[in-house]
Length: 290
Image (cartoon, rainbow, N blue to C red):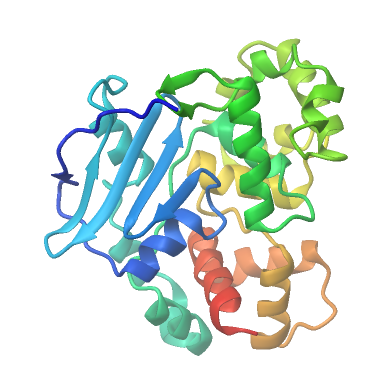
């Protein structure tokens, strides 16, 4: 397999310094499914971009193939949501009156929400139903390899929804999708019949955007909230999965609560940045909750 020649390492500007464990949690903790680690280097693919990241004494550095997609530096800054003051947002969470949230924040200082491509985020989380992160990554990788264009030697982007509309469900199932193939196929056909639908949905207010996403085959409350949080920057979204249910049941004394009730509690308790609080809770529960 041909491999790309890589550019020199250059710093992410302004300087970005996080602990290796926090970088790993940000890139590979359930927000995104297209990052792979080898030794101390992370390699990620999104849209038309291929980037490698590593931490050293000066902070986070990146490099790309020597013939990168235009605007890779700007795209990386956007993807990392690097212009957002995450320290200030985290400080505004109710950690002063919430000891468990304070514990979670202390465990992952500098954790942030990635700002991913909206359509790709939708595809990734349609693959996520009842699957663990490693399995979702396998499905997404197969979708890219089988149905996405090569954007650098050895690297393929994800197929667009327009491209997926032409892929038979039977072929999608060869990407280990199982029953999810039906939903991805149906969603692709739905979007093909409505050009511009995703572009119209992304900038809408949270409630309106979520209502539209719930129209899509296979998209329920959790998937819609994940897409809006990680793909549209709607920080009021509060996705509820098994880990969040455990966290709220154990740490906030809400045993037996349904996901919809937990989501309502989360948005009320944590406020307009509930999605950021959710990521801290989720990360802590997976790492330390047992």
